[in-house]
Image (cartoon, rainbow, N blue to C red; front, side, top):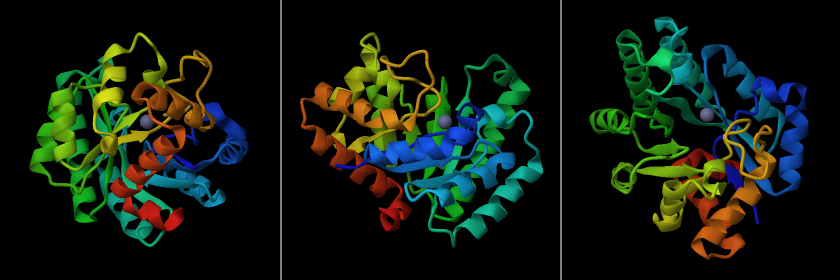
Length: 266
Ligand SMILES: [Zn+2]
């Protein structure tokens, strides 16, 4: 039984010099693959190096909406050039983390909304041009995210930490996306997320920790870790009345379907 953590910020300052140990401990717990998305130009080399240091790590490149305020137009060209080089790197699997965040107050002023939309759309074009999946951050912005996906046709990807409606989930699925579930699903008060995790087609679900964020109920408020993924998978198994090995196998297959470059790594 092996698991894929489709979204983990192993490069985050919270892990400091423990990242190597955390990756090894996760591997011992059958977390066979951890996808590490970049958040800004400055950490592209960090996520790449982490992915190369561990057999169970891979990486994505992109500019996260929370890092858009300090991002420069030139960073988009740097991303495109970095992706061009990374296409020869088997550990590079997606464009991410990209998206829109209309929750953080600083990001919702109209000029910043426009800058976010611009960075999101331009990064979708890079994903489209290289036929790569995208790892999406969607916060209070489901419809705006979907609007651009209808316009700029990427091959699909993952709506990470999915928290939309059943109708929005169906649109993502129709556009070739999987929906990411993690720590939020472990809180009994997260009624809507638990209902989505229980009732959406199992072929549309992937697991993630988003570590060090979104700690599961048993860990909260301590920082999250990819070592928690099997136990998060156990919650999904319970919610769906399915056997744990089936959940591990199906969610891992789903991750490889949506990020085909993972196939050569696992
Ligand atoms: Zn993230």
